[in-house]
Image (cartoon, rainbow, N blue to C red):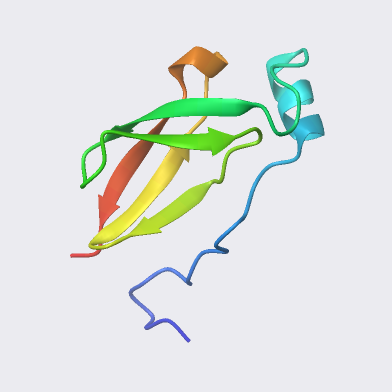
Amino acid sequence: MAPPDRPPPHEPDARHTPGWYREALGGDPARPGAPLMLRCDGGPLVSRLETFPPRIEVAVPGGVYVLVDDGPVHRWHYQFVSDV
């Protein structure tokens, strides 16, 4: 169990469903399994190759990347959140 001042651990492969994105974006942004190259802001990575739908969180040494998926698909990226 996570300490009270820390969030619970994330699900390693948590993803929104393709239907969730279709509803949120008002169309069909990509087919399931399509490759997506997503920019990474901060942390040890520059970018990540994901498949649609991308993972919501990606654990890496020193922290976690959180998907920022508001707006059009070409603006999606991962934002690094440090463990410290």
